[in-house]
Length: 250
Image 1 (tube, one colour):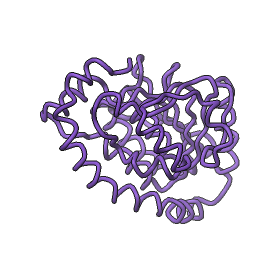
Image 2 (image 1 turned 45 degrees about the vertical axis):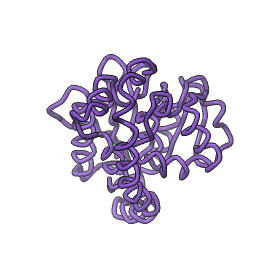
Image 3 (image 1 turned 90 degrees about the vertical axis):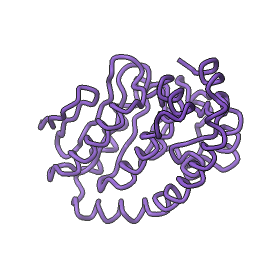
């Protein structure tokens, strides 16, 4: 096992038999604050530079895969004090040269669920909850969810989740073609590593060209969505400050 050293304790990285594990663990809810976003971005870059890495398994620590943007960050965005840094995080996954298996053993909310949807292979836990509560807090979706959601879920389900802000159990997503497995939480990691092991014995050059080809439609859709989502945020975020405080899901 080769451990990749980062300058942040928020993401643990190691590479074993061609399988790289990126594990978020801030000891709480793996919120996508600026520090976590930067740590994840550096981690993907670092693993891409490891010649023995063939595939990445993305995990979260504890019962929460990721809660998305933290309350304080959303409030700062609504007040115009910050520009969203998490909006570029999906690009780090989409442009990573290696295939990514997202093992969502825990709940994934908002940008946390968007992060999982950006992976090449997605596993959910039947008893955990997933969704996009952006509209519950009074502002429009971000992180490319207006396009990425449709690439994994059916347009009908994607639109319902984005409009309603509903959090659904993973079991409700069983049978949806864009989700590879829905399993008990305790089994998600084992199945993710089984898939990763079957990828890791392939030549890296072949994996890279296939990843570049298969990710092209999502990369193009993501880039196109950024301008539209930014315009929507200019309209919706300034009026959402109080609703963010009241409706944020901890």
